[in-house]
Image (tube, rainbow, N blue to C red; front, top):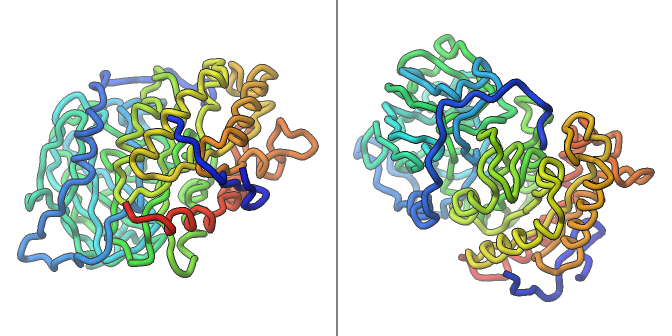
Length: 455
């Protein structure tokens, strides 16, 4: 494998090969979800054709390409604290205002609402999108209703997703939106992204069109019923780069309301580039694993089970960074030899969908077993982490390697995070997440993407 730089490698030839959270209060669930829909159905939902806006609306710009600019990989309704995130019981006659930062700009947006974790049809009474003015407030004059096949309300099947009609709304890279959804009837356990590292808001009644803050008196820690925002991107955005992983990708222990996850820092790097660039979307889920459905359903389904929805059918997807497996090792005492075949299948699926795929080495975690128990950071766990990292670096299975381990480890003890990057012996702090983003050779990734034909 040829070195591009000390932190990133691209092989000269590709083979055609086919965490963790601290013990917390007892999980409360409102019911089990149905099985995920087939990948073909997901592809249809994500790639649904754009329908014209109603005559009263300004027509969205039809030039450019749709790309995913924000994602909150959805999971079923489960929580450690109903006051903080009521996804276990869901909503009734309430409006949720989700606050999200886009990684790319454009001339129009469309929104994806999700019932992926639901066991019954979901009635959406109304929904809107607006520029955020901070907190629950929106910028005056920017709120626009979302329509679905021209209608302001819709029903989303259990396990399904709804794509809004395009809305003419000019957005800049790194701009923050408020996406509001009114749920007039009992939703049952709420499809969510449990760890948002972002304040979101609830109001009683229908306040989707409200621009103020007084109605939204309750803060919550999760995103609810929102799975993505796409933009009709500016011409220099050649596609989407998807960061796929667990809590370390999700940004656990990063500063709240500050967008300090590693994919956020990576999006900032790409947004500042001249010439061709990429949007960045975060497909990390706390506690996620490769092999196992964990009892805490907010930890989501294993990566292979959500790969089609969260990666392969994302609009404009061109490349994926895969960093997962540390929870399998720590929580389940999995061996590298158990994980490698699953990696190979993910690589095969990504390539079949026309995506470049880059392997991220697992970061050091020595010292974390006191908090997370199991084989997190034990000598046994460290042995398997090293074996998996060796395979990621040397197998040639990926289109390139991003050595997050090398970027974050302590030279004095490579089994541990560098103290300046360490939040809790397992997760990086803000500085560590920035170091992860800096370890990604965006020039090499863009070079690989732009030299080929567009998918």
